[in-house]
Image 1 (tube, rainbow, N blue to C red):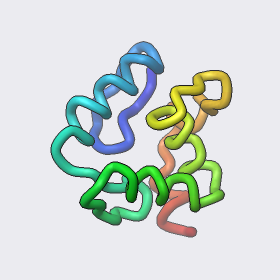
Image 2 (cartoon, rainbow, N blue to C red):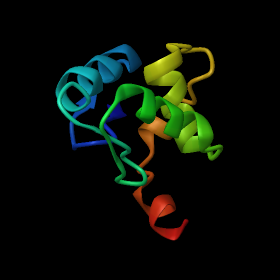
Image 3 (cartoon, one colour):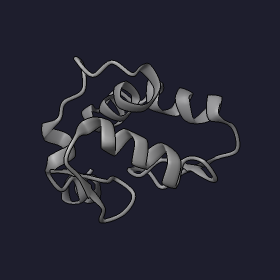
Amino acid sequence: MYKCLYCDRKTKTIHGLKKHILLSHLQYELYCPYCKENFEYYEEFKGHLMSNYDMFHRNLYYLLIKDDMKKVNKELLIKDTKEFVKNK
């Protein structure tokens, strides 16, 4: 099961998770689930994910923007990353 980075929803597939995030969360408001930073434009959001080199931002970039499932670390989408982000 893959846990949504924005809410408590879980999906059986990585593709289901991507679809859920794009349709339920990023369609109306662009914000980073790690930094809680809001973005007015998609290009700003994309740039934010590209410019942060930690594994969480990079993973979200590959999942949502690049659509490169070979580079997506699925383990990061199964584990709860909230503790890491708080201690960062």
